[in-house]
View (cartoon, rainbow, N blue to C red):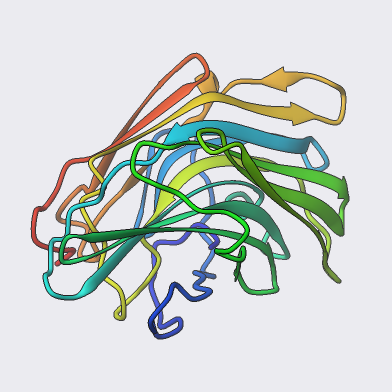
Length: 248
């Protein structure tokens, strides 16, 4: 799910959420930037800086824009995938999906270049309004732990992952992503608010997203802005602003 201004086909959506990723790279800018797959906030630093990231958020209820098709958004935190590092990305999050008026929530994790994997739905479940904590922790440049906690149900799932490629550890992100290409449309997710957002560094410094670059999700033709983001202290507020019926 690397930061992108370009889409290409991923994988078909079946009866459950499948592993979906976006792999095009886009260089960062010192100012707010636009993306065709990400909306949210990104911290950047020197290689080897970030060792962990975390945030809490409350599960919103997405509204379908293209009934009767399934529509999904992905809410996640992660390390790498934005700056000049294309080799790996460590991330975990929740798919918010809606089919007509039926909403489902699915937890997943990923250590790119391996694909995203869903946590077993028997191990963790979600309901509207549940408080969720997401965290990604680097053990070594080729290993880490991805954790999702449903605070409302007192359930935690965690996965230790390894990769043959190394993390750069030079960006940390709080994101909502549409990255499902032609197969799955993007719903109106209303508002996602990350609270208690922080990224820790190898020097022991804990950084909030207050100095983060804002990333605005835009439509494929760049005519419509889809999200707006406000960062205040350790809070990242990402709001859907349209259009109401699709990414034209």
